[in-house]
Amino acid sequence: MDVKTAARTLDLFEAFIGACKPLSISDIARAIGAPVSSCFGLVKTLEKRGYLYALTSRRAFYPTRKMLENARRIAEHDPLVDIARPALEALHARTGETVLLGRRAGERMVYVDAIESAHKVRYTAQAGEFFPLHSSAIGKAILSELPKDALRSLLAGYKLERITPRTITRRAAFLRELAESRERGWFCNEGENVDDVMAVAVPLRIEGDICAVSVAGPIDRMKAKLDQHLKALAALRDQLQRQQHKGS
Image 1 (cartoon, helix red, strand yellow):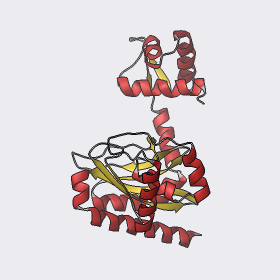
Image 2 (tube, helix red, strand yellow):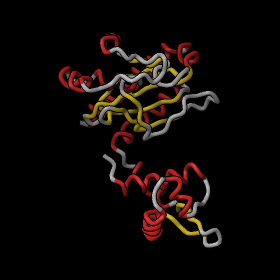
Image 3 (cartoon, rainbow, N blue to C red):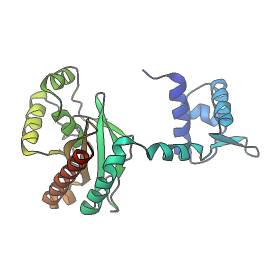
Image 4 (cartoon, rainbow, N blue to C red):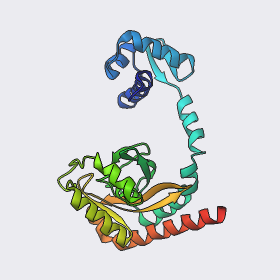
C-alpha cells in the first residue's frame, strides 16, 4: 500500500523527468493529480531541504543536483552492484548487448543494475524498472531457485498475465518450461515480455540473495550469437562464485 506523501514526492520528481523544464506549483498539481494546497506544502518542504529551487522570474521550480549527488553516493555502496559490476561490464564488452542484473521484489522482478548496448537498435532498460516474473528470463531464473514449497505457494495466487502474444499463460506449460530450463542451465524469454526482444539468463547468488543476470537484445541478433552469449553468462556466473568463495 502506497504512503500518500511518499508517492506524491516520487510523482513530483517524475513529473520533472517527463516535462524536462521548470514547473509551477499548478503545473505540478496537474501532473501528479493532487490539490494545489498539498503541492504547495510539498514543494516548500523540498525547497527548504535543498531538493528544489525557485526561479523567481518564471514563478516556477526545478530540482537541484542534490538528489543526483546523493543517489551517486548511495549507488557507490550498493552491496549487490558493488560485487557484480565488474563482471557485468566484462559481460557487456564480450556480448555487445544490454546486460541486466535483477532480483525478486514480491511478485515482480526489479532490475538492480543495467548496462545498455551501444547498438542503435537495442533493448533499453534502467535500474529500478519492474517486470513480471513469469514473462522475463531473469524472473524465470529466479523462480527456478526457489524451494518447491515456496514456488508452489507463490504461484498459487499468481496470475500468469498475457504481456505479449508469446507470453506463457498456462500454469502447466510454465512449470514445464521452468523444469526444462533448469535442466539445461539457462532461461529464455523470446518476445514474451517485449515484442521482438530476446533475453537469456542464468541464476546466481550474491551475498546469499537469489539474483539473475541476463543478456538482452533484438531476437535475430541474439539468436545469431546465442552460443557465445550463453558461454559468456556461464563464465560470469563462475567468476562471481569464485570471487565470493575467496572473500568468504
